[in-house]
Length: 60
Image (cartoon, rainbow, N blue to C red):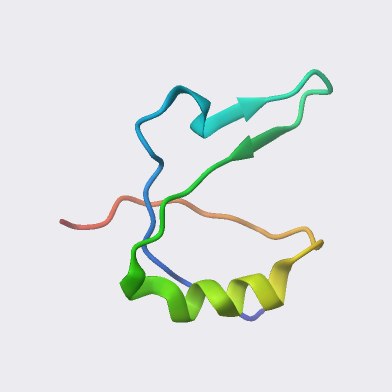
């Protein structure tokens, strides 16, 4: 399984996590400029596909 890892944060805004009427949800992430290379790989790799997502806190 190919992995793409990057650092991102959930913005401190009320609409960062949106739950729709059909039970699905959308999560907005803020990605710093230092993570643009893996983000571009993610866009090419995952657009329109189901992805397995794991979240963990950064050690900082």
